[in-house]
Amino acid sequence: MSDIRQACKALVARILEGDGTASHTMRRAAFDNAGLAPPLSTVVDKLAKHAHAVTDEDIAAARASGLSEDQVFEIVVCAATGQATRQYETALAALDVAIEKV
Amino acid sequence: MRLAILDSGHAFGTKALFAIIRTVSRQPTPEVLKLVMYRPDFFGKRMKEVTHEAMRGPSSWSVGDRELMAAFISKVNACEYCIKAHTAVSARAYQDEAKVIAVLDDLETAIVEEPLRATLRMLRKLTREQAVTVDDIRSVLAAGVSRAQIEDALAVCFVFNTMNRLAEAFEFLVPGHQAFEAGAKFLLARGYR
Image (cartoon, rainbow over all chains, first blue to last red; front, side, top):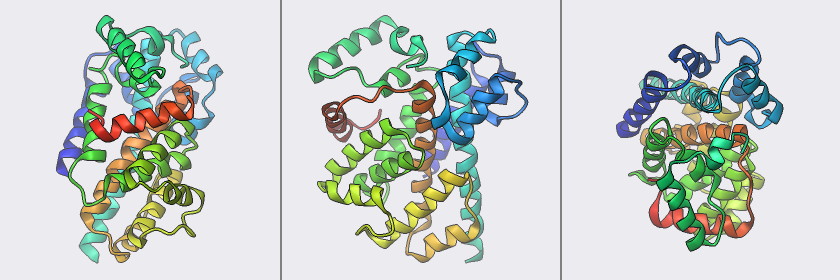
């Protein structure tokens, strides 16, 4: 499945390093769930920990902070992908250790 | 959808494609398609490749198994749209809806192969707690699951932990049963590319 790890890396590289309407700094912060200020930090943290709880108001607050819909789109995509990537990498690292020490 | 661009901001050719899909399927344009077809160069194009590889690429898990993992992870994340979508695909792939419903209802009592059960337990913990330990992985290996199978299951978990979050954040509208049946037929015939 090295193909899929490459495909995931290409996805992450594109959303963080490629062209976008949100700054590279903001996309990286959303991906890492670190270094953002409210209200954006609120929606990004909810997305990471309990996405089901995100509300209309959270998205509206992000827009009201001066972000366009395209910027919110990018930030949400980065936040969701970031959390899933951390889970994936943590589990793959545990798998590596488990295989070595079986 | 909480962002208007995801409902109506697509390129002209994409809107034309959506109109064809609505006519042929006699169902609304799937919300997930609206997401991955919006500025596809940013996210959707590469995400579709990742998803297709995870769900239809070479693996010793069957398509039904992988779709069941997708539905199960979506249940842990309380993502109604994705639960319904992938329950329908898994049930159709297995030709056994009862099995899928039983696993989603109670993994511990469901009649399911032990390697699959052990893998689903680990995916549940990873999704719920954001991490698993080396011992968690060892339990899966001890149940007879290979390293490659664990890697394949983790790829499915990556896809659905991303997509569940997006479905919830953008608030995908949940359509009726027929729409998910039409979607399941399409996804089994064509995959995710």
